[in-house]
Length: 126
Image (cartoon, rainbow, N blue to C red; front, top):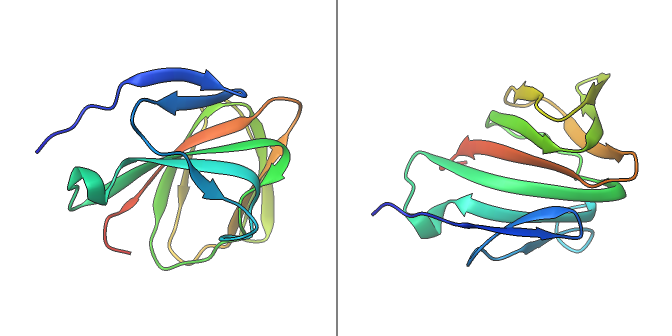
């Protein structure tokens, strides 16, 4: 069954969708700091092939240092970040798109005074 999640506005500079749980994404469960996530398309929506998540990272925060078999796509919605991708670092800005290959080491660090937010598409089966 198809699902529509309506945009609900912003909270602390982060985007929010109505009726979508804001999940902890921090030191207790991932190694990230000052970060949240919302699963916009996932198991609850019955998506068998892909999941779409929104991550937001407050100034001074970062995502977990990850390396996993699945690949994913990232679209930067707002803010700026430094991306560790393998052994290199890259600056990211609103509108940038990143393809992260499977098994590539990666981590995002917010740069500047505003939150960094991005959409991330991953395979449903990981």
